Amino acid sequence: MTYCVAIATDDGLVFCSDSRTNAGPDVLSSYSKMHVYNLDKDRMVVVLSAGNLATTQAVISHLDNDLELEDGDSLHSCKKMTDVAKYVARVSREQQEQAKDSTGNAEINTSATFIVGGQIRGCDPAIYLIYSAGNYISVSDETSYLQIGESKYGKPILDRILGPGTGLEDAARCALVSMDSTIAANATVGPPIEVLVYENDTFESDHYIKLAAEDSYLLSLRRSWSEVIQSAFRELPQFEWEKRSAPVLQAITD
Amino acid sequence: MTYCVAIATDDGLVFCSDSRTNAGPDVLSSYSKMHVYNLDKDRMVVVLSAGNLATTQAVISHLDNDLELEDGDSLHSCKKMTDVAKYVARVSREQQEQAKDSTGNAEINTSATFIVGGQIRGCDPAIYLIYSAGNYISVSDETSYLQIGESKYGKPILDRILGPGTGLEDAARCALVSMDSTIAANATVGPPIEVLVYENDTFESDHYIKLAAEDSYLLSLRRSWSEVIQSAFRELPQFEWEKRSAPVLQAITD
Image (cartoon, rainbow over all chains, first blue to last red; front, side, top):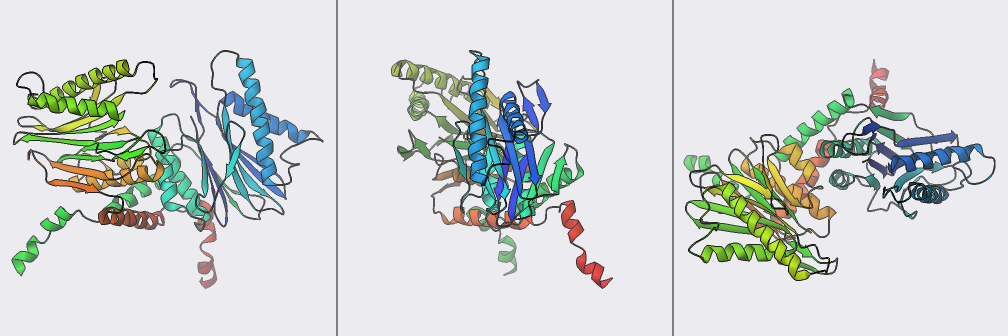
């Protein structure tokens, strides 16, 4: 399984991915699902991948090979981020079809989904979710994030915290809490966790971290979140019957 | 769809259920999924239901009918809560088989799952999750809650807040936040929300509430939770690069 999330804020983009892959509960391994293409000073493209590992590797390998060709589509030749989405969608569909053909009747799920995001100079930054069928969607004013893989456990915190005005680092912490909740709930999603924060119009990022299971920042974030959420919980409104039982002391002193 | 959760704490039990049923996105209706049997001063049993509505109605109807018979198993004749679990599991399996037979080859999913919980005098309180196959599980020191239906969205908050020592009302608020997150994420889970809080060794409960969509307590809980979680979020540890950019003022004044 996999969990990846990308967030678009007014200030930039956040990408976050886990690294666990599995083919059954006892065939676990670690592969990065974040592929960063900072090809020149005019474009920054990040691809997050989920699904069949052989298929996603074939897609990424195809993207890499296309970069070495002088002609034809590549992450370098795309003029806009929508072109990038369209191009990655086409490569994904082709590779999924090849994988289906080559595995014959083995009834293996060879599908893959991707998030692509980034910015090309002259255009606004953007993120897209590319479905396995090859169609794709972007974000909106109401929904500022996209998820692939095991998306349910980590969704509520995104809905409660994120908005277009959320600060970039807060969005990154929100992605990490969302990831941490997912890792706690699904054994096939796991560290290292990769986070990349992209600030609009910079066309590069040195705000990238890779957090192992026992990384001190990750442990500190997890501990802090548990503490603040426990204490926040005590501020929630009481039920009617709790209020009824409260003013005993007052009744005595009145 | 459905979402129900039951929680066991040191002090008692909490039951929470939504009321939305659907057969397709445009066939929505409301049915209570919380069935309370407070038969006499020696036993309190709550049944939460999920799955095919015809099947769950048939099961509940069967439980009700059995109560009117003088002989045979019923919620009244069971000696322990494990007997209740075993009995409801048997009725569920029978009704699922009948539903499967009567719907023939219509390829309708007629399965159902249940949570049963409560207390019978002389025994400890208990909750059980009865799978559609008829087997069942209870809670443990590490896992103090059971869920049926759409369980993923609401799981992280349960994991972060609940422990054996959690107060009963806090557990009920936790169930409500978990329910609220699920309702926000899945359109086929919806209000009214029912909550019942059972205090150990009381064999009754007047701490039952039914919250409509616009209920003032529900709206106030949702608003409070959003506020406290947003403010809690600002207390999370900073990334390394934020720390680097922070002490500008200090450098000037030193």
